[in-house]
Amino acid sequence: MISSWDETAKGWNTVWFTPRAPEALSETRIATGTIAAVHFIGLLIQGTEWIGPHGWLNVDAGKYLIGDAVEGTGSFYRWSILYWFPNAVQTVAAIGLVASLTTVAGIGARLSPFLAWLCMSTFQHRAPMLTLIHEPLIVALLAYLTIDPGRLSWTVRPGLASGQARIGVNVVLQLIRCHLWIWIAFSLSSMLANTVWWNGEAGWFLIQQSRGWLRLGDDWQWIGQFLTHLVIASQTVVLLGMIQSACTLLGKWCLYLFILTVLLLIGDWMYASVLFAASLAAWPVHLSDRTSLSKQHNVSTQ
Amino acid sequence: MHLGAIGLTYATNWRRSALQDRVLVWLQPYLIGVNWYQEMLPIEWISDSNSTKKVRVSIQTASIPNEWQTVLDSSRNSPTRTRSERFMYPLVELARSEDGQGITNMLASIVLHLEGEKTNDSETILRIRLENVSMAASESDTESVLYEASLARFPSSEFGFVPEIEKHRSVPAIESTRNSP
View (cartoon, rainbow over the protein chains, first blue to last red):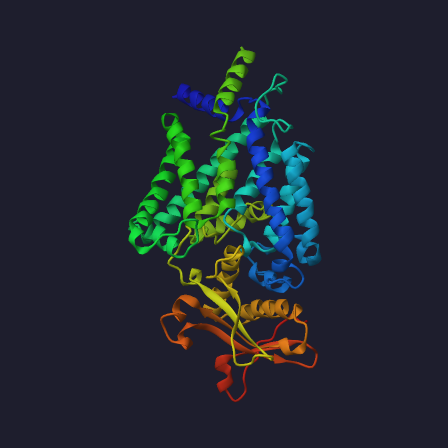
């Protein structure tokens, strides 16, 4: 009994606290920073129209929606400076853009992802009802990168001057993996709670609404049904692939299929990009490099 | 602990038990303060909910008093379509739940936004309405209207809304607003 507890504890420590080379986070950091930069460019252009002093959702309406001063709504913990300085929308977006770009470039260590997270949270706290589907994932990735941004350089592949393995890098990778797993599990269960995802109508509805990149006539209804089932099946396999080493490769390709369905059915390329960025923590593009990093680490510890 | 809280946040996105609600309130300083808390995210892409059906906001101005001009339409394909849908969701919910103060705040925000762009008085908004586009195509005009109100202007340059139904009363109730131009 005690030994099984010991083994569980050892396994837990191995999963979470095995030091990893900082290069393992490079892909995730560069991808996240790039997507955040694109997001802030969007806010720089359109942010004022939505939440500026005379935006569609002004401060009074925004405060009403968050239940300002109403007990139990948690509005007390919303700290966006945009409630007090609605004119600062473009300033915050510009700071966020710079912070995102420095995150990509590997400048500023933890400060860059932290600033990008701070600016993005400032917008989300100002108008949580306007938050889009991809935003919670970007902000989570930035928050995790604040713990350890990995190797601070433009390069993705590990070079000769490889950094020393750190526990923080592994903790961040595992946190992103688990977060993505929870997200996809929640996405899948939300879909399965709706009849249209069972009878195949969901994909066809979305195609008819011209939301995604796919445009089809009535004769192609079966493609909508096929894509509906593909969305459900791919997410199921992704979840399995993230916890079962035997299904890892299958999980990776199913994630790419899921991302493809995101583009075809809802056309949300930002959501597709964020899913890809988060997946790099589980399935890096340079998988062979990750393997070599792992081997390198094993050799050095021996 | 952290991942458990994240799981709880996502699990309670649309519906929650009383127990989950109590735990969420207890965790609010962390979840909201550090921005992990999200609610009503359209993560399932499509929904049966009436609030996610296509809706639009239309106005009548002093220059064209008999014609409804669409100013916000969540059924129209545009780069801001998704954001418009997110904006429309609380608007529809407030109209459905007959939350006078809430709908007034939202509509006042829209009026101030539109009048902030106007170049002359002829663009002054007279009436505003929220309608269900998916119903408008198949059913009668009145059934598709979720909320409609006339604007009542005060000398102090503030304004209020007289909901359509209130016109039939001898003393119409004007929804006051904290907004002013």
